[in-house]
Length: 191
Image 1: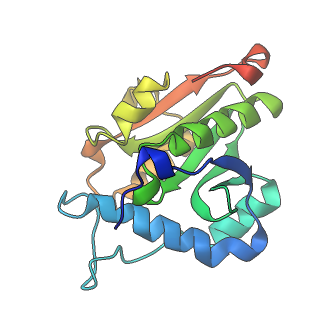
Image 2: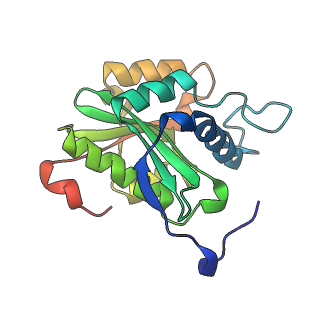
C-alpha cells in the first residue's frame, strides 16, 4: 500500500454518496478494516480480510435517508465514506471508513464534520457513535473532535440494542459509546 507524500496529496471533498457506489463503498469498508489486522479486535478470514463488508441493505437505507457521504479526491475517486442513521434526538454515525493510504490527511475529520452539520440541519441534539476505546484512530480520534464517552448506565435503549448485537462478534468491554452535542449555531463550527 503506497503512502501519499505531502507534495502529491490530492484535494479532498465530501459529497453525497451515489446508489451505484455500493460495491466501491463496501470495498473501502473492507480495506479500512485491514488496519485492525493483528489487534485481535476484528475477526479476519483466511484471506486476511474481514469476513463481511457493511451490508448492501444498510447502505441502501442510508442512500434513501440521504445519510451516506463520500470522500473523494480531486479526480472524484472514492477514498472514504460516512454512513449515519436517524435515532430520534441522535444522528448515529454507523460507519466511518477511509482507505488506509488516504489516512491521516483530514478525510475522516471532514466526514465527521459533515455528519455534525447534517445533525444540525435535521435538528438532532447530538451525534453518537460506538467505537473501540483504545485504538488510536477510534475513541482518541473522536475525543480530539470533542466527543465524550457515555457511561454504560446512561446508554439509551437503542444504544443498548446495538451493544447487544455487537456482543455476537466482539468484546464490547473494549468498546464505548461517544457523543457530541450540536446546536443550530454549530453549522459552521470547526472540529
